[in-house]
Length: 335
Image 1 (cartoon, rainbow, N blue to C red):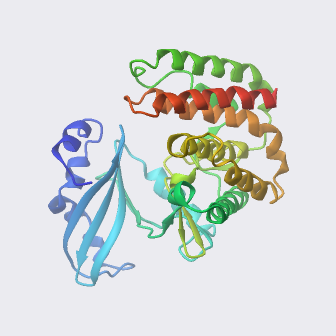
Image 2 (spheres, helix red, strand yellow):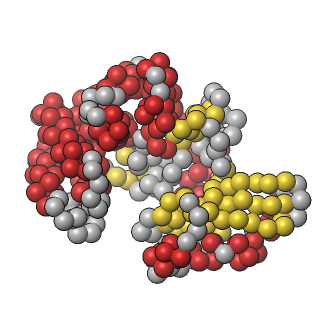
Image 3 (cartoon, rainbow, N blue to C red):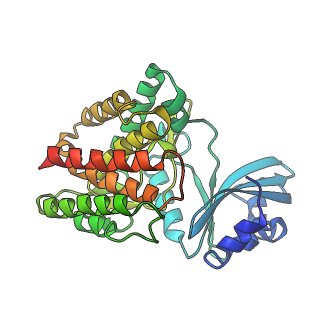
């Protein structure tokens, strides 16, 4: 979407450098290094900036650089504070075998500019997994699910460990309180979510000795792009070290939420979710199966919380109720 005044007004106090990033003249002054090695893109003639998505403490933008060597498109993420750790984590992941020519990959990190709190990375052009799961035929959905599972299994097995350690107790603690007031009309739904969270806390002691591994933090269909044989996963703000079951569960539950919103039934993508899980477990990860129902219930609470905080939309209540009910059902499978 185009840059607009409301973006400046809403975000400036939480993202102090955002106005500078959205100003092509100011931004260009920070990007002249792309004319030098190792990039050698040519003299910078100008820049355009377009907002993609805003959050409370970060904003994602697309940056088009007009250089003497041609047009270059980048993705930038500008943060409210120093997130150089995201850039360092992406560099380490890329060096571990997730480079631009790898079958399992990430967007290639280009630079982090501390003066702007701006992360610059490759813009990946390809087919988004979300579109395939929403509109694709069953064989296409099956293929996408398999590729997503193989990417996650490979990442958990070989990627470097970085970021905070998020054990089961920290995972649950992050869900205890809503970040902002519950949207009007959602109070009863929020109470049901808190009730499910209480049951999860009672069941948590049995998971405290799980072996942890590299984690994405919010792995789901919306962060995966297919470029030929290359599978690319982006959004590394939440990189951490966690139970492998957590990211598996998040992917499966996110598919359920997608099915509820757009396909009319929480079960509409169960076949794809089943292929995802079967493929993942086929990579010798059967230790995950016994803890998966618990983390699926956790993911149901987390995704329902996001919906509870949203303003009114026509499918909101259906999605919240469906996720909370699914959370209770999955927890019964664990206990």
